[in-house]
Length: 342
Image 1 (spheres, rainbow, N blue to C red):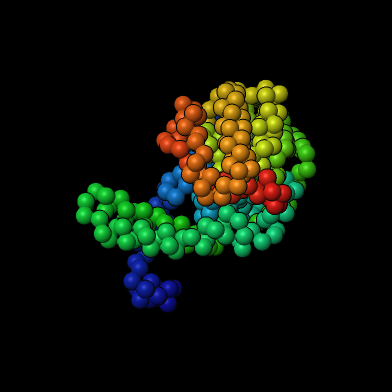
Image 2 (cartoon, rainbow, N blue to C red):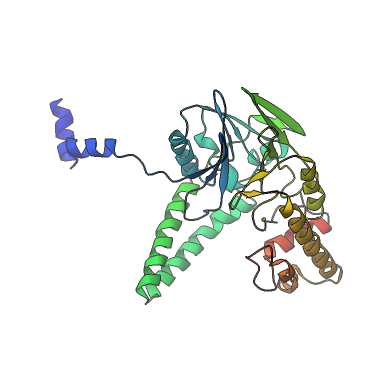
């Protein structure tokens, strides 16, 4: 006992201080919104990617979680924060697709079975750290952080300087967290559909076709009339970087046959109804048509990205302010048109 006390003193930490910290709970980072009884949208931690969502389905004896957020720490935070709404164990984690902002928290769910599409497992057991969105993110982080630091150092406005310095801290923490990622693939895979029965709750996992990736799942609860749509249908415009824009409208057309009222998307606020199916189909068909014409005319992807004009859709998508779209999406569409997409 004497040696323990001595170690605490030498380390500059008092027993009282340790007791205080032991009693101080870790702040909750997730915002839980109950959509219907027992089913929640869990909005991710603020900072780098505040729009990344999970869905939480509290059943009779256990919990099913849909998507695990974008860093291992965010996944651990979700596991901790779940205790604010239930003490039941997480039996299953479902990955809607392989992107890092939906799977990098997988390693925090050590006592859960992870379910995903066969393609999700293929990507997470492949070269996910060397190629694709996650690899691009890792390689781009140092420059982004250096740019932020330079802007913060040069800023004269105190309010703006404080904001930029906070962004530097957030980005630094994010970089540290994302580098500890160990890709953790599904241990149970789905080719077409799988149904879980947990007490009196029916949970359907459905593959509706190529769209956001080659292997997205949606999660449908028929009794509760809730759809967890992943990134196949989000609140605003989904990322096209791994998409099959030509197939995507037909895939989400299949959602019309499901009797749902509430949607928990992979990004953005939950919403109701099927209007966004129409909106996003129109967007996808328009951007594909414009890109296809420019491709046929021999216009390079970078020039095409500047020329494509989606402002006709800004009534539904507030992020559209002017002509021009992200180059990564156009590069992907060109690859699909040329038969070079995986």
